[in-house]
Length: 119
Image (tube, rainbow, N blue to C red; front, side):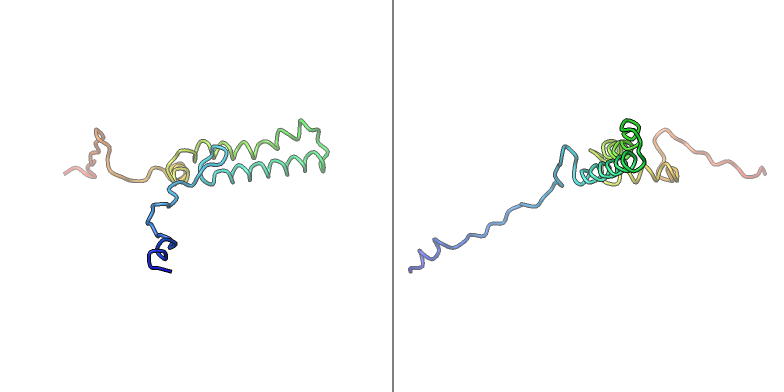
C-alpha cells in the first residue's frame, strides 16, 4: 500500500466542544427534578395501596391522603427548583429559618449609630 492510500483510511481526530452544557429535560422538568416527581408518585401509590387494601378505606377517602406526597413534590419542584438558579431552594429555606443575615446596605437605607451614653 502506498503512503497516500494509508492516509486515506486513517481516522481524523478533531477537537470539538461536545460537552453537555445542559442537564437535559424529562417531561418538561429540568435536570434531575424528574426523580423528585417519581419519588412522590411512588410514595403516593404505596400510601394508596396501604390505605385501600390493608386499612380497607374506601377509594375516594384513600385517594385524598395518597395524593398529598405527589402534590408536595410537584409543588417543590415547580415552584422552588424549576427555572431557578442552583441553591435557590436551600437559600430560601435558610433565610426563612435563620433570617437574612448580614450584607451590604441597600441604596437609600441609612443606619445611624445611637450613642450609648450622653457626655
